[in-house]
Each structure stands twice: as C-alpha cells, then as structure tokens.
Amino acid sequence: MTDVRVRQAMPLTRVQGTESLGERYDLAFIACAVALLALGLVMVVSASTSIAARTHGDPLYYLWRQGAFLAVGGLAGWATTRVPVAVWHRAGPLLLVASAVLLAAVLVPGVGREVNGSMRWFRVGPISVQPSELVKLAVAAYLAGYLVRRAEEVRRSFSGFLKPVTLLVIISVLLLLEPDYGATVVLFVTALGMLFLGGVPFLTFAAWAGIIAGALAVVVVAAPYRVERLLSFLDPWADPFGSGFQLTQALIAIGRGEWLGVGLGESVQKLFYLPEAHTDFLFAVLAEELGLVGAVGVIGLFTFLVVRAMGIGRHAESVGQHYSAYLAYGLALLFGLQAFVNIGVNLGILPTKGLTLPLMSYGGSSLITNCIAVGLLVRIDHEARMRG
Image 1 (cartoon, rainbow, N blue to C red):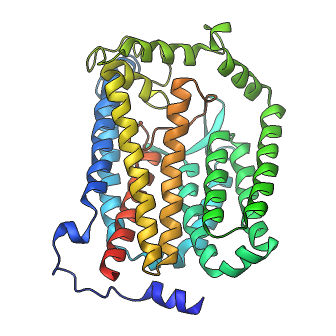
Image 2 (cartoon, rainbow, N blue to C red):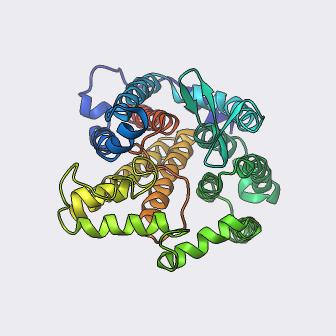
Image 3 (tube, rainbow, N blue to C red):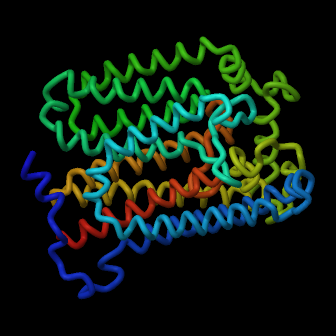
C-alpha cells in the first residue's frame, strides 16, 4: 500500500508542453461536457421564460442566474484541472466531515431554508446552497481513498465493507431528514458500485445490496407521501389532476414532440402546465421542442460522457494511479445514475424524485459541483496520460 501511495504522489514523468493539446487532454470528453452545458443553458432559458416573467417580471431572469452559475462553474472546473489529484486524496476525509456538517446545519431552524416541504438549502447572500450536491462529490473523494488505504481489508474482511457503509448510513439519515430520498439512493448505489469495483467479494456485495435495498424500501413505505408517489407513478392517469399531474404533463410534452419536435421555444407544456419545467422536468420540455431526435441526442451525450469517464478510470488504473481510478469510477457512476434517474422520471419509468439533470438543469449547487467533477475527470485523465 505504501508503494501505491508513493506512486500516486509522484510528479508527472513526461515534460509538459512537449505534447500536443490532444495528447495531454481528452478533447472529445471536454467537448461532450461543453455541449451538455451549452444545450442546458439554452433549454433553461426556453423552459423558464413564462414563469420568470410572471414571478420576477423579467423573462430572462433565469438566464442571468444560470449564466452566472455557469461562469462560476466553468472557472471552478478550470481551477480543478490545475490541482493535483493527490490533493483530493489527502483532503477526502476533511471534505466528508465538512459536507456532513453542512447537511446537519441545513436542518437547524433559522439556518436551513424550506422549499416545497424540504429543508435542503441555506442562503449565502443572494444564492441558495444545497449541501446534498456537495456531499456526493465528498463521498466519492473519501471512498476512493478508503479503497486505496484498505484494499486488502475490503477484499478479504467483512469489516472492510461495513466501515464505509456505516458512514453512508449516517449521511443517509441526514439526507432523509431533509428529506431527500433521491440523493440517498444515488449516493448508496454509487458507493456500492465503487466498493464492488474496489474488489468487494460478489456474495458479500450482493447480500448487503439486498439488505440496503430492503431498508430503502422500508423507508419508502414508512412515508405516506412516498407511497403516493409510487402509486401515481404506476398509474398517473388514475389521478391526472392530483398526484399524477407532473408525470402526465411530462408525458404529454414528450408525446407532442414526436420525431423532430415543435421547435425551440415553442413548447406549450412549459406555459404553467408542467411544474419545475426548468429543473426536474427540463428533459420533457427538450423532448417536446426538439423531438425524439433531440432526446436521443442528449441520451447519447450522457452515455458518451459516462463511458469516457469509466475509460479514464481504467487508464488511470493501468498506470498504477489507483486513487484516481476509483475516483473516476465514482464520478462516472454519479453522472450516469443522476442522468438515468432524471430521464427515467421524465419518461415515467421511475417514481418522481427531486434530482436535476446533470450539467443541464437550472440550479447553482448542482451545476457548479458537476463542473468541478468534469474538471476533476479532466485532471485525472491528464495525469494518467502524462504518466504513460
């Protein structure tokens, strides 16, 4: 394990500046992320003009805010590409503790801000911060380090699996108190995926995955509003003006798009029919305006992003950068799971969850955190390329 840590902290072996830009960075991966960010900004503007005009008196209100978030996120992502991955390795435990403190703080009356019955935000000046977005990145950074430090224990001992799961349970309790069931599921599945890729025996993994799935199912059944969401997801048309309203409006939007869509900016469902059109249900508006072609194109971009992120992890592992590899796998799982859940909710194949579409939906915390994740993947890939 000492050898792994030494190799992880070693300086780059190639002389930077002697290779072309394409040899030092994965330009296709960067272009894919930029395309999602640009398309997301366009769709946020298209989906939000009506509600922005009614609520804030300015149809471009969300454009200015999302544009500012994008500028900050782009700067943060670029800065992340300049920071050695070894810094993240050392800071992993501190990031986890800090994010857990923020999750606890948001539950304190007077500190947290309630929106739609959930205490998920707190104010920092003119903006709202959502700690659950930060904790996803922190868990991935910490767990990657744990898999390097405790590699043999993870592979051979039950305690090696139980220790990180215990930490996840504590964080999940804080998330469920907000409540944020969607973030809890994504966090647990991502962590389990990282542990499996880190070498947890299959039988141990399968047994605990089943136990955790059962526990999450109990959490669902214990809350009447979650049961109602589940039932409305199974048959939204049974109550199209009540519990099934969001989903039925999303399905109408997608159906109206047909092959090529009704045209950019021409959505009808965004005109106060579809709630959260610029956040959770942005994909439905995109499908209505850009049609099946546009929807499949977005799915293709996310698929490419996730596949390339996993490829970055495999390359890092092949050159001995095990922390970087596990972190890349974790970030790939985060992007893939969040996109899958959000799109699945919009299509009616998953129950409604409060998860945004990564890199595209409106929201400062999500956008900035995802830009940092992209920058981190670029840095991981760069270091692996320079190493060999």
